[in-house]
Structures are given as C-alpha cells and as structure tokens.
Length: 254
Image (cartoon, rainbow, N blue to C red; front, side):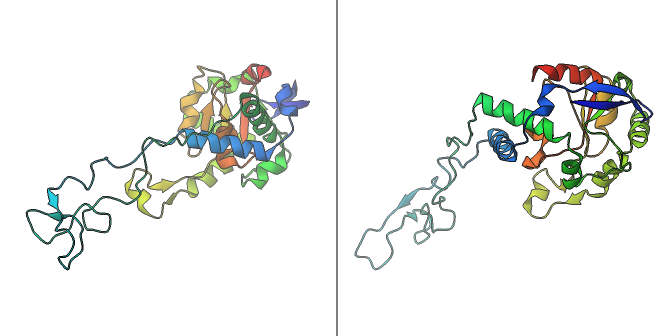
C-alpha cells in the first residue's frame, strides 16, 4: 500500500510505502475485546474494611423477650447495631478488594487487535463516521507527515500546522464539547467529560510532544507505547491519527 506524505505547510510531497500492519483486516469485535481488557486491567481494587460496621460492644437479648434478636448496643440498651438492616450496621454484600477483575487476552489476539485498530485509521469513511471533522475533503489517509513535524516546539506552531493540514477544526470540536459530568463523579476528581480528538504518533524523544499535548483532546504517543485504546477509544474504530515519517519506520515491526 502507498499513500501521500504531507509537509509542514499541509501540501502533498511524495509517495510512501505503508507498513504491512495497515493491510490488516479490520476486526471491530477483537478491537472491542482488547479495549475492554485494557480498561478492566486498569481498575483499582476497592472495598470496605472487614471491620466496617462491626466495631461496637453489643449483646443480644435472646429469644422469648417479645423483641427481635438483633445485636444491640450495650451502652444504649434498645439501639440495634452490626446487622445489615440496621443504621450503622455492616453492608450485606460489599465489594471484595481481593476479587480479581482482570481480563486476560492471548498475545497473538491482542497483537492482531492493535494492527487492526491501526489499519482502521487508514479509512476516511471510518474516521468521519466516528465523528471527527475535516476541513479538506481531498485528504489522503492515513495522514503521514514529513520528519519536520517532530521539530515543532511551540503550541502556536502546532496550531498553524494543523490548520494548514485542515484538521484543526476537530480540535475546536473537542474544545467546544467539554461538558460537566452528571452525577457524583463531579466530586470525585472527574468533573468534566472531554471529547477525544487527534492522535499524533511521533518517534520517541520528539520535542513536539509538549507542543501538541497542550491542545484539547490531542494525545501524543510513540510507536512503542501505543495501546489499542489509543487507536480506538472506547472500542470505536477510526480515530483521526497523524503519523510522522520517522514513526512509521518503527511500525514495520508490528
């Protein structure tokens, strides 16, 4: 497979031979399975203390007294404690911290999911179908840019590049789509919901990482740490991705 390379000004430069991973069959089922496994393996174990609701001095009156036989506080006489139905009692079936919530996946299956998610970024109809916006209708996918993109150090220059390429409108979509989350998550460190925008794949150690990471919804990765969830957030294939010419050479080993 061949595609066009774009320069910093957003103009077509020459042709480029794509790595074999872009010829992989797109398998949404395997991609979704891999993303679900990655999300499950990232979860933190949680649960109450084993002594929660049981730290009371209690006694039971026994049967034949004309009252329920739940444990009662020795200090207050009639006040029940410890049993699940009671105020201040333990939970009936609490989550267990020792429960294993990880999901396993075969190495070959996971590698196929990653190649398949990468191949999906080469289909323009999948990218648009996912909700991404483009200013230019004649863009050639996947979007490959010359090595000069990795020398960008200022966010202002990064914005100019994305505008020249015709994809900055998608960053604006992510910026305008920032919403306050409904529910209790607002007070648990995740107040805002933010749309996902462009994924930039650059070679490791590139100074352009800080320049692009400042933009809303934009993620910067190198070929060694790309996960399936980066290429298909939430399991939805076709993320708008931009690859540097140097980074694609490292994808030959996928």
